[in-house]
Amino acid sequence: MQISVYGLGRFGAFWASILSESFQVKGYSRNPDRITPPGVLRVDLEELMDCHVLFLCNAISSMEQVLPVIAPLVKPGTLVVDTCSVKVYPTDMMFKYLPESVEILGSHPMFGPDSGKNGVEGLPIVLCKKRISDEQYILWKDLFRNMGLAVQEMTAHEHDREAAYTQGITHFIGRTLDELKLHPSSMATTGYSGLLDIVKQTCNDPWQLFIDLQKYNPYTSRMRQDLHKGLEKMLGTFDSIESLGDQNGRNSFPKD
Image 1 (cartoon, rainbow, N blue to C red):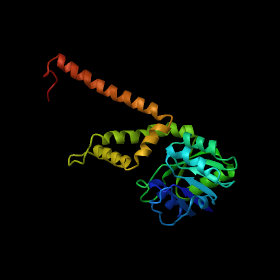
Image 2 (cartoon, one colour):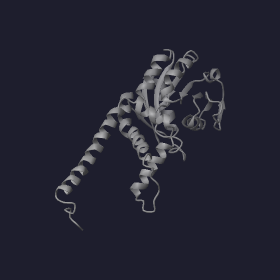
Image 3 (tube, rainbow, N blue to C red):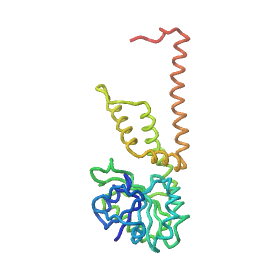
Image 4 (cartoon, one colour):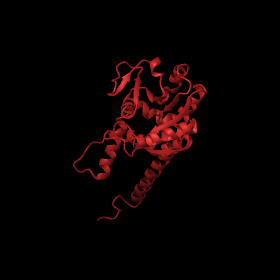
């Protein structure tokens, strides 16, 4: 089976390398400076389309620019699989732009170069059916499982709703904490070290990914509103405590 990967950025190069352990893989990048990972054949766009399965590893925000370009080139019967961290928007865009002769599957590998640096055994991948035969869908569920991945099945909306309060909130908090310029400390607790790990992991991903996660997931706006309400509630609690202390005198709080 011939596999093609469109986009050899940080995740695309990693994913192409993982796939090359099980399949023949060709790769393409619009950026000539991108390094071709070992085991992957670098080709031009036209040759990339000569494949059984095409994985799209471009940025979420570039979907509406990429799809009209590749749509006339994709061969009938090809399965096109996106790997975006949101699912409603890219699967809708693929359905809109790709010809009916092409099958469509939404996927979200829930890992990347950092979390998958020691292998992908046991790591989750979410699959969202869009326009794909039962036979092809079952085949790829089995192939992903043979790669050691833990397959999860859900609709695109179910994915985005859950992702907003898992991945989306993690990236938002990580980027927010980065603004505080936190640093390692000899007094660090396990919890604090965990916060630094979140900052490091989220800020190691491209800024565009962070923006796209917040912009193209229809449920992240609600997540941010809930987070804002929670922060206001906590701040309000301490404002009330401080106000009570001032009313009773600055030394009115119990002493140890």
